[in-house]
Image 1 (cartoon, rainbow, N blue to C red):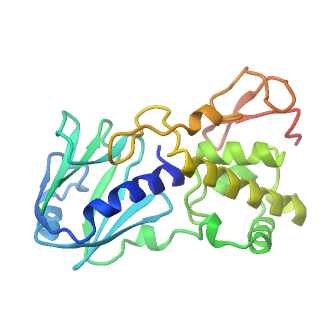
Image 2 (cartoon, rainbow, N blue to C red; image 1 turned 90 degrees about the vertical axis):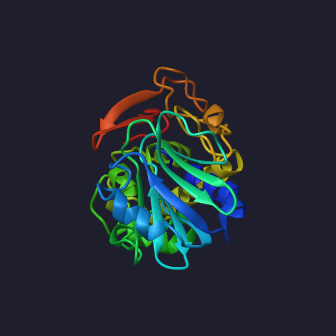
Length: 263
């Protein structure tokens, strides 16, 4: 699933190509992408002008001259500009000029128009870049929860997903099952620093392409080459040489080094 760095990369590549353009036609090729309301979604989008494009956690939000288009890529969604529609194209916007294609193999993604900002987007928690270290530490330590599931909670903090939580926890030397309330202020602020560091590096690398992710021009990211724990089960830890372990935390596959990240 595209996380904050991947969605940020898509926004940066797509915004200059769509901002200010009018939507001449909106076509849905799948009812799932439209939340089972393809006619209403197409009617809401047709004739609108894209004022701006921004990211809200893992969502892409198109600010229109009337309403919003919110896109959640979920597992396999892609936004492709001026590409040839393939067999998994689920929605197509004809712009003046250009074409925007929402492609989604597994059809978990959503491409939805709404007159107001959707409630699920408005309810997202603050993003790591928006929090000062002390504020992040206070927020984290105020909760009694395992640290990894808490960081994946989009209402607690927006944008983080499986890949970058694993990577940040490893750099901070924090076990994924550590109690958030038991972390010292110093360790919590260190975690904030490693989250910011990992996200910034991943954005600079265009994100991580593990399965389907590409940016709006069809280019893969390269940060997967720099993963220290994610997807490296059984391989040596780059810090201590001990094997990376994989466990399940909150129903999510979790990679960590038991030597560097003691519970």
